[in-house]
Length: 397
Image (cartoon, rainbow, N blue to C red; front, side):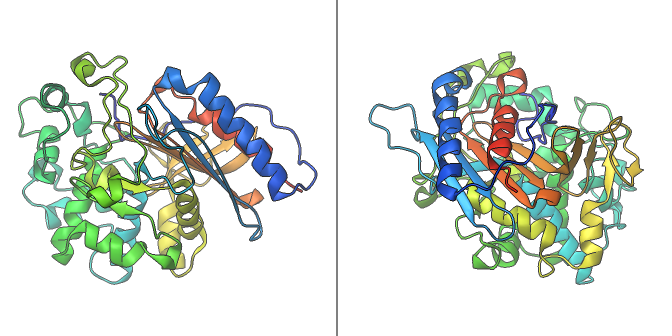
C-alpha cells in the first residue's frame, strides 16, 4: 500500500490550454463535460478498475454549478447509473476539515498551533517538541503509518474489516515500536500527523472529531448537506447512496488478495481524521469556496495560517511558488503554480477504492471537482488529465 490516503498527488499541470473561450451556455458546457465523462468510461475506466465518474464545475461570479456523470455505481450486472447525488469517499480532502477545526479552536483560545505534542499527548515523548503547526504542514518528521510493513501485512491478511484505534495507527510509526520507520526530514507527507491532530482535538475538547465536523462544518451553512465522517463503518443509509469503490493492488504484493475488492462498506478507522470523509463533487466545490473565501468559516488570521505554505521540495516556508519550486503545502491544502493554468490550489484525496480531486483557480474564480470509484495510483491514475480537460472546457470570458 503506497499512501492510499496520502494525497495530494502532485499534478503535472503542463498541458497547453487554449486561451479564454467565448462565453457559453450552461447547456453547452454540460455537453462538453458529458463528452469528457463518457470518454473516460469508454477509454480509461476499465484500466483503472473504475465504473463511475462524477464531475462538478462551480462557475465564476456566482454562475452556478454544472454537474455531469457517466458510468454505473458498480460492476454488478444491472447496476444503476451514477448521478450527481452519488456519494464517494474523499480521502485526504478530509484533512482540511481537521485543519479548519484546529484553526477554529485556536481562534477560540482553546489551543495554539505553536503548542507541542508534549503538551497535549505526552505519551509520545519522541515527538514532544513537534508543534501542531508542523503536524498540519507535514514538516513534523513523523513517518506515515500506512507505509509500515506491519500495517500493510495486517490488512493484506485480514482485509479492511479491522477497527484501528488512533493509538494503534500512531503506534505503527512511534519509535517505541521496534519496526517503526525512521524519522523524516523537511516536507514529508504523513497521515500519522492528522491522526495525531484528531487526537489533540479530542483531548483538548473532550468531544469526538465527528461531533466537531458535524457541528462546525457540515449542514447547510457551507453547503455540506450530503457530506459525512465516520472513523469506522458507515451506516447503510449512507453506503447505499455511494458508488462501489474498487481496490487496485498494482505493486502491492501484500495486498494482492484484495485486488478488485469493493471497499465502500469497510471500516474507515484506518483513515480517521486523515481521510475518512464521504461527499460528492458539488459539495466539495462548496467546501473549497468556503475554505478559501468564507469570512464566517475562518477569520483573516486563521486563513493566513491556512494558506501559509512550505515548499514540498525543501520543507521551508515560502512566500510564493515559482517555476523552479511549483508545489507547496499549507494546512491540509496544497498549492501549485503552472504555466498551463496559473496558480491555485488542488488536492487529490485517495482512499483504498476512490479518488476525489479538486482544483481551485482563484484568478479565474473557478472550482472543478471530479470523483472516481477506484484506487488506481501513479501512472495508472488519470484523474489529473481528466481535470485538465474539464478546466479547458470550462474556460469562459
